[in-house]
Image 1 (tube, rainbow, N blue to C red):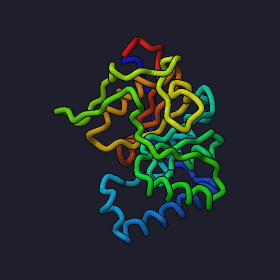
Image 2 (cartoon, rainbow, N blue to C red):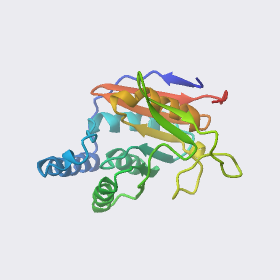
Image 3 (spheres, rainbow, N blue to C red):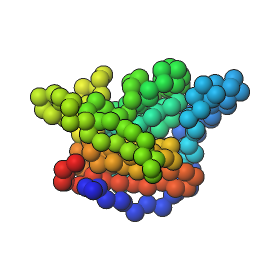
Image 4 (cartoon, one colour):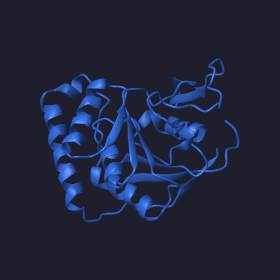
Length: 214
């Protein structure tokens, strides 16, 4: 393991008006999503507590923990985390495999005047394989996959390698928590920060250390 947990206590802070307005609109659209029973098509979509996510992202930003301004949300859903990153000044990207959710996220952020890019793709990049394990989901490197010349995985549609991303956010499904930490360990560059929302008032921060090999 080549990452460390950063001490963090969930904060309750007053939201800036533009953040509160963004959350209210996202909540309204999420309610519509459930009322139309679209969640039956996408049963794995569960929203986080947005105010807590914003507070954590703002905390790492104010503390100067990320080395730069590139952000990825793994499994972006409606794009709320990605929207927060855009509000905080990041070059924000959301990775979401369900194209309908990508469309909803793009619509939400565009209507709020926020600039972000959503990629309809799996957050597990080429060169890795996920599988069901006894403890949930796991991930391994696919040794049969040929990387690009520089040897670093990237998402199609992004101009940089994943190891160049400064800040990651994820709200993993319960059985995928350890897998997402393993993915962060495998693909993030030294100094990258991960904000992981595991449930109400359960948010953990991690920093990638010098790579010791995967």
